[in-house]
Image (tube, rainbow, N blue to C red):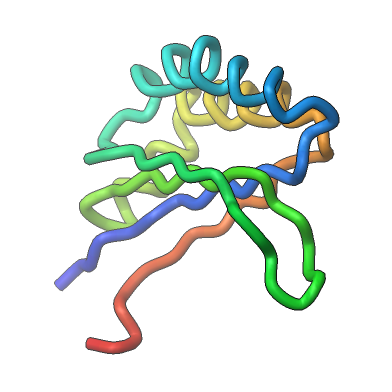
Length: 107
């Protein structure tokens, strides 16, 4: 049985947060969404604080897929590669950190 999978794109604190947020909403989302074949949803959140002085992230995008296989297929596709490249192009605080998460440890 396959479980859902999530692609997390964690954006470092940008040089200009307002400009990043505008670019994310007005450029990146309209560009990336149609290229994320197989995704079942996208949730975007702004990070309010990072406890313990760890790496400072400004925003996290959570792209959900019905399975790890669907996520891998999207990431390997030309559209998936274009979406990830575009995410990096708007990340003025450094390259975004990409994580793939699966399963619920509490289940």
